[in-house]
Every structure is written in C-alpha cells, then in structure tokens.
Image (tube, rainbow, N blue to C red; front, side, top):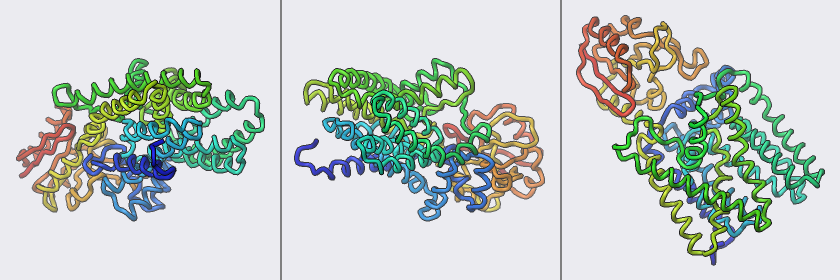
Length: 502
C-alpha cells in the first residue's frame, strides 16, 4: 500500500491513470481495418445490423450493438469510438489491483496496477474500437468475483455466471477463461466438491446464456480464423507481441526509419517480463502462496496453448490480439516477480525499468500510423483538401483479381472518414454493404465503370502503395482511353492518392 493513501483513493487513482494513458493521443492515431468494420456495422439501422450479424460477424454482435447506440449519442470520431476501450482499460487496472488483494497479495497490488497501466497489450487495447478492452475487463472482474464466491458467498455465483455470459458474447475466445478457471479449481478446490459444483453450475449457466451468439458464430465460416502461421512465428508472437508489443510493428517500418527503438524495447521488455513472471511463480510456490500461481498461470498460458496447437494442427485460429483478455494475468504475475525482489529499492527500480521500456512502445502506438501502418487519416485529409463536389473517386482493389466482382478495395478509408469523400462519385461500387449484409459490399473493375467515368472530369484514385504494376498499368490505360492524364499524387506509407483530370 501507499503510506497515507485511502483504501478507495488508490484504486481510483490507478483506474484514472489507466484510462488517461489510453486516451492520450487516441485522436491522433488513424482508424484502421478492424475499426472500419466496427464503424460499417454500427452506422446501420438496428434492422440492418441485425441482418448483418446473422450473415457475418456474429462474434462481434454484442459489441456492434453497443457501439451503435454509443456512437449514436457521442459520434464516430476516433476519440469517441475509442473512449469505451479506454474506460475498460481503467476497469482492468483496478481489477488487477483488486485481484491481487483477493489473492492475498496486497503487497503487490499497487505494482500490479502500475504494470497493467503500461503493459503494451493493454495500452494498445485502450485505443482500439473493438471488443478487446471490454472482454479484458470482464475477464479480470469475473476472476475477482470467482474468488469472492469461493469464500462461501453463494449469491456471487450468479454474478460470475452473468459475467461469463457477457464476456463470451462480447469475445467468444473468453470461453477459454472457463477452461483456465476449471483447471485452477481442480487443483485448489479439489477437496471441496460443493464449491466445484457451484462453479460448474454458474459457468455452465453463463455459457448457455451466451450459446445463441456462440452457435451463430460457429455457423459462419471464416469468422474465427486468421492467417496461417508457422510454429516459430507463433512462438515469437506469443512470447513477445502478445503482451509486450501490442499490434505494432507496422508492416511498412524499417530499421532505418526510427522504429527500431520500440522494436528493441519490446524484446527487452519481454525478457524482463518473463524473468519476473518466472521469479514470481517460484517465489509464490516457496512462500506457500501457491493459490495465486494456480489462478494466474492457467489463465495466462492455457488459452494461447490450446488455440496455438489447434492452429498448427488443424486450422488457423491464432492472433495475438485475441488473447487480450489474458493480459491482466500477465500484469499480476509480473508484479509477483517484482514483489519477490529482496529490497524496496530493487522493487521500485523494477517498476521504473518496465515503465522506461514500455515508453517507446507506447509512443509508437500513438503515432498517426500506429495501427499496423494505416495512414487513412492522412489519405482522407488530402482528398478533403483537394477534391471538389462532383469529382469521382476510385477505390482500387486490394487483391490482384480478374473477377468481374471485387470484394476487397481501399473503400474502408471512406468508411472510417466519410466526410472527406462526401459529394464524390464512387465509380466502381455496385452493391452497397447494407444491400448484401456485408461489411464491404461489391465493386466492379474500373474497366467496367466507364459509364460513370464519363460523368466526371476529375478522379481521385486511392490505392495501396504496393499496388501491382500490372494493375497500375491497366488502370492507367483505362484513364488514357477516357481522356484523363495524371496531375498530382500523394504517396503515403500504405496508401497513395493519385489525381487524374481530363
């Protein structure tokens, strides 16, 4: 505890610190692909959103409906969209503090809260308009309530079941927390069959309550998968990226552009973090405070291990950000390691070292291109400054294709920043996202859009910077045949804007 601090003042201060750290710079970071999906879904009417989640993205249905009403009241700015995640971050930090005390480790509660406030995965989730922040808050408080219920306060089992249901509905991966809790209870409560029975009833009730979302999600192909990864890549991501990096680095970064500092810092932080976790586990076992070990270690490791093994053996399901709900366990285990250090000055130095190592990563997350290099805010601002009502806009395909219907284009920049493209003629959109209950809609090739092209005298082309040369030449030939020539362009780290005029 902090000398002279009130019992209420400490968690309030920690919670405010967590929220404020997340909020700082949240307006500066460009919205990106995942957040565009949130915006695309939430901007629809409730009927259209209901139709969408029955067709795709049922895994995010609860969060989409929440943002639908939240943004309806507070708007769709980056700050507003990310504010709920920042608030959830504050709840996570307070939850980590409360969990330390519930585990009988009040001596590390403040350190645990401070680590949680600066842990890169948690500071990343605080500026992400997705369900990761809320699911992490549910996970940590469900664990706190579990410990309270185990002390014989039976009415808390109902609250535990409700939180499991809510968390699973918000993030289906949180169902793996139940597996972690089951493992812990089989070890620490194996002689108390009544406690195991009450837990089983509460957990099963929560899963049943969430089952409509779970069943709908499982019936939608491709909703839980991600790109296949090798065993070495998965191991690196699980050891470093998952807790100590967030969703950085950008895919356009290089060692010569100033990004190497946070890259090195993440490796150093991972080394320090895992050393402290191991130290904390060994110390807790030696001090007979093993209860904390059996609650936290399965929570930290089991979800990743189960999904990782399934991804390698069967089908890809792994992505580091899916396990954000395990980050509170990482923060508290690191704090146990800090608490195991023999001198006060060593404990203070360890916290300071974590803060110093986390700082470059935190700053990289708050760069305008901090979301995997996405530069949509600059792209939209350029179009907004130079385009005029009645101009055309061509959102180029993201994938090389010869199909007449194009599903993936750069149009998400207009979903995230619609005001910049208001009044422009979308040359290739054929089926809007609401019309076919999708997130992207359907587009035609530029060569099939000459009728619309004939109605405009200026076209703004938004395309990836790594746009294939063959596609670029094909587009240029279409513009040349229709009497256009290239006038100006902006080349960003991920997207380019090219002006064509007659």
